[in-house]
Image 1: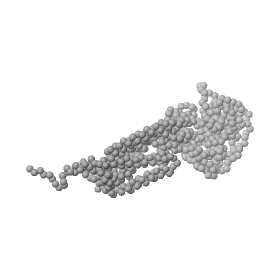
Image 2: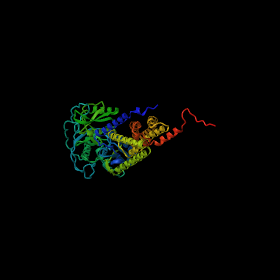
Image 3: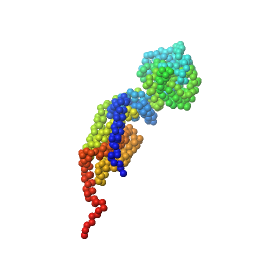
Image 4: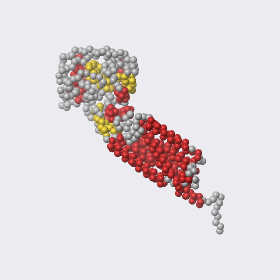
Amino acid sequence: MAPSAGHLRPGRYLAFFALIVVVLYALVFFTGSGKPTPKLGIDLQGGTRVTLTARTPDGGQPTRDSLNQARQIIETRVNGIGVAGTEVVLDGNNVVITVPGAQGDQAKSLGQTAKLGFRKVITSQPNTPAAPPASGNPAAPPASGTPSTPPSSGAPSAPPSATGAPSSTPNGGGGAAGAPAQQPPSTTPSAPPASTTPAAGGQAQTPIQQAQAIRQNPDLASTDQAKAQAAQQAALASLTCAPNVADPLEGNDLSDKPLVACGDKDATKYVLGPQFLPGTEISTASSGYDQQRGQWVVDLTFDGAGSKTWGDFTSANVGSQAAFVLDTQVVSAPTIQSAILGGNTQITGQFTQADAKNLADVLKYGSLPLSFDSSDATTVSATLGSASLQAGLLAGAIGLIVVFIYCLIYYRLLGILTILSLALSGLLVYAVLVLLGRWIGYTLDLAGIAGLIIAIGITADSFVIYFERLKDEIREGRTFRSAVPRGWARARRTILASDAVSFLAAAILYVIAVGDVQGFAFTLGMSTVLDLVVVYLVTHPLVAMVSTSKSAFLSNPRNLGLGAVQRLASERKSTRPAVGRTNVKEA
């Protein structure tokens, strides 16, 4: 037997719902630094579109597989860095990143190739400004004159590191404590390597190929001192270490050849040997603050094979420098103090907290199979987004008005309870959207608004199921007060089944869909769950309160939209024969 409406204690349900609303809006207004509004997608607020153009080491066309792999890695970086609402798509040889709001600057670094390699430092020298070459090509050797011969290697080692990692100077350059001695200048004029001439077939070399021919000349690491010095002079003279200077070799260096590179943070030029350990051997990477050095560092852990290679190299090169080269730039060149056999080491330099975190994230999420030209960020006007938002809100308002009119005409006072329940459901949805935007970076897009509009119908459907059950009970001859608990006991099973089907459909759609469709499925599923909260904690308690009210206005069936049903029940009762009596017609 169903419990009576008086046993429900609707005040407790309503108080619990009020507590939920108060807690949610306390979190909205008193936590977080953002505005108390949901985050909007680029289709509703405008944003930035970043285009990255792919290139290969030989200047040819990138393959589709490499482009897809690059897109997937960039998507992984997006998720790891926390750029919310970003889309990564392929457009020919371009990777297009669409970022809502003002996060475009952060997205520009997502295409960093992060080709990390470890090389032995052959020699280094301070960077001296040099006149641009006559040809205007930064990769070409100077027309005349030769710089002084680079200093020899074998600088004294720095003090031992307390962490067991190779120590580095704060500027991220060589790890030597003292200045190495300079060798006397060579009188032998340097000549451009033969590989700088046009390639076979009469085709001119690309800037990347020209840079590789000079700065990755195998003679740089030749055992012939004269040949090595001449190659080093030409390569060092052709290298311009200055901020904002485009490097045609960036991300396209050949790992099996020597390399002439600049320091990332200082004005030092390096001559490096072939790569002995690739960055792909890194198992994990994280950033942190080194209390002993008083600077931000990046901690690296190598996998099994990488750990052995690193241990063998450090064992055989104690006192020498090992350069950590990221996209042809020396991030750090520490002096090896002792053999490091554990596979753990650090990259140190003039890192800010953001620099260290970005580097660690890029290394952790993998190197791209391609290099990309400098990011080109284009701001998308918010005019279209504003118009879309207004259209979505207008559609939602029209849907609500239609539902309100229908409920008022068909259910009257019960329709007012429906309107109140929908309004309270809207309060819940708004607060949850704001908090999800802060906590998980959820962005509301046009498809999400469509899901919310459809959810209005799902919520109203729960009320219709309940009220129609009440009518069924009254048709059977029960009063409104006794019909409420019985009707609720039957209606809630149907409401639960209906919402379960809607939520299951939304969950499946969210799992198998991508892009905007996921936003639609998410808001639909979320609204379905909140519908149950409102029906259980608001709608049913309010109807129970009305049924037990002593007010003549509230107890009048006509005012509840139940007058016709009650008249039909009365007619059926009057025509029903009395219990224990039969009508017998005399002959």
